[in-house]
Length: 417
Image 1 (cartoon, rainbow, N blue to C red):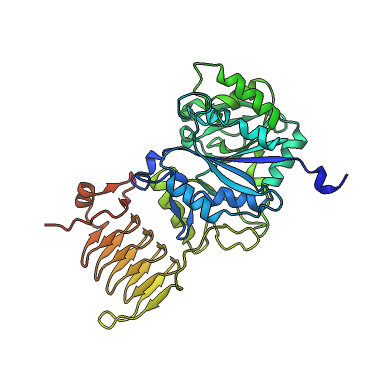
Image 2 (cartoon, rainbow, N blue to C red; image 1 turned 60 degrees about the horizontal axis):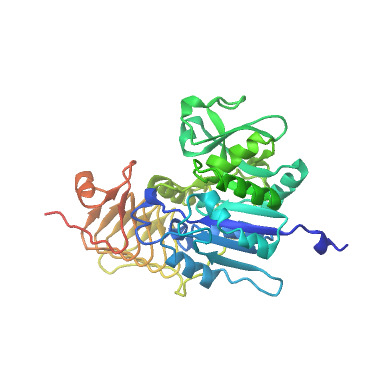
């Protein structure tokens, strides 16, 4: 039998149906996985790139809420060669099991079991759509096959105090999972033996035996009291059966970043989204976009290169620790620790510090923007100040728990009286 014929058949499913309420106003009119990130990317590009780089190129993206921009991005960007049967396609909620939306992530899989019939996979990857990280999924599948598990959960260490944000894993002998608690209170979990202040958390990435997953979904669908959630229901069911194992993310070696630390961040809140961008512009970035051996793919906007020029009135520009996308023009202004998306303009005398400017934002002459996220098309008038007057900002804009000021797409800037 040839090597190609001996390879297992794998179907990859990316769950992209969440509302993303904690990222509002960035999710007012777009699905969470469609939120721009890192200047030129969208969140969905990260899991899709990991799967595509790993050679798993039969991918369906399950969508539900406000999916138009996400669907457009996938259709325009993720066009794989069909010669070998490769594809990335979005699958909207179709109410195949009755007149209802997805009840949870497990129900989303249950309502799309027809995809299993079409592809007849041996294994199924189920990845979340809104995390920033690199992983070689081939190594995770190898671990799954060697362990004989029915499901393998990718795990990473996090602070025990953050337990309520994750599914918490307690591993037993080998890689077997002894218990799995979905978003428990920190006082209800025990820290790791070598560090009581840390726990092992689920990354929201799973690999299932296809037949096991099919049976599990049918079993879970019959439980009326279930929330029909993968982390809350399916994984605990597999733990009880003794068929759940954990894959240690820190053992994964991604080509091009050997020896570097393992970065993973859930950008489910405005503050985590902001912090992840600040990681990008650090002198020694927590997440390095510049890995040619494991690139993050996206569709580049057709625009000229970024340009930094002098201004006749305000003199030379200054840019430090920042990412400048194509089409950006900085004219006689200062930009510090910021990420500027395509088409951004920063005009004479303006100052932008520790901020994220999405597509086509314009910062007027002498305006000052600090610790802010400005969604697409925001026009900051000359002399305006954002992130400098906490009371004014709280009255007119969204302000995160950590004090990051966020303006929605096209939102008008309110000048002080």
